[in-house]
Image 1 (tube, rainbow, N blue to C red):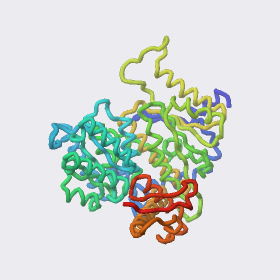
Image 2 (cartoon, helix red, strand yellow):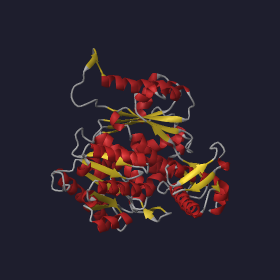
Image 3 (cartoon, helix red, strand yellow):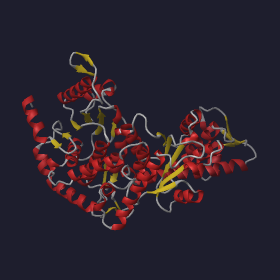
Image 4 (cartoon, rainbow, N blue to C red):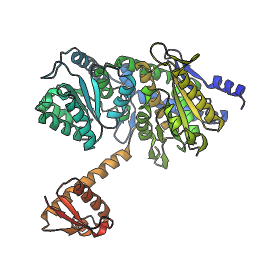
Length: 531
């Protein structure tokens, strides 16, 4: 295909939304007209599935749940008044609470104002807020945000110790987000944080806010301990699509981010993706491109390359949205299909010096999505040489990389937004949520359940139960015991490797367990409780 033909294909497939000043270019994806024609029936079904979803169909049959994150930015679409109230009332409460914090009407006991925000969560309760904070938080936010998003003790210590070292703990608002209140990571982060506050002589409830389901364990704790406030999560909003619920809107509002603009941007994009014409629907065009790239079976990875530092975390956010939604063993008919699209990425042009060499010349097991931002910065730019600025270089790197990849038969998509602002970020979130839904329909998988995640949680819980049995058994022993004998005593002889790893971890952390013997030969180790 010569340059003139490429230019014509670009024009034929370009999508532009004037209201958002948003462009989508799929012309460098090699799908044929024949494939587009063959997929028309699948897209007709996908469009109909979206209509049913927005009207309140049970989209998660495993849990008998509706999926209504689209209603969050347009409550008028909600199927009844009760659900509309579940959206509008918390939104007004969030705006009022953030304003009261900013104005010093809600204050900590020993400081004039809250200065910092500690967000405790996991998965969608962390990835979305982290992405939005990186993208949109002002240089000097009313509350500077920090995250505890893992059960790593060292990571928790680093966050909390930095607040103590800067004398900020006494002016830190703590927002804990957990749907059930029982998810281990936020539960552990909350317990560790509360202990540190109390050790510093600070009454934790005076600093604590919950985002959770009404009636959950976390909700009950917040009520019993008289926390500052609790904001509701909705049963019909999943974690990976929760950024435009209280999960993401509360921390964003506290940072001074325009949450209404985020919602408006998402609403506008939702409207654009309701169009039942493939070429005029940006989310459908993305789904088409993904289907083509991976032959409808996820055979190629999705590489996300935003050419803007503020969008650094977009690929991490998309990892959960795309991979948790589409990574499924079985389709809706029960057939084993092993669907999914792996997502990775970082930012341009940094990654041109990291892995673009492989993208161009290595295994062609991927397609690239470039995220282009038209506006370079606020204010004028320095000319580094006559007529050339830093932003010109960045744009040149994007165009050059796109061309270099195409010349070597590497497919790419380019998403272009005018600037990184609340409206555009809301639109990006909505675009990919809708694309995931369309693609799930195309390949006939349930994009709204996560049996693999639940299996992992159950496996982790079984490990901890085994650890309790090991400790109890060791404490009852009068001396040392061989590793394999210990595994037999705790009724897990077939899981001796797991027993070994548990006792090794306990020994490394001075938990009263010692190991004697040559570490090169684990089967010869003796285990003893020393207390």
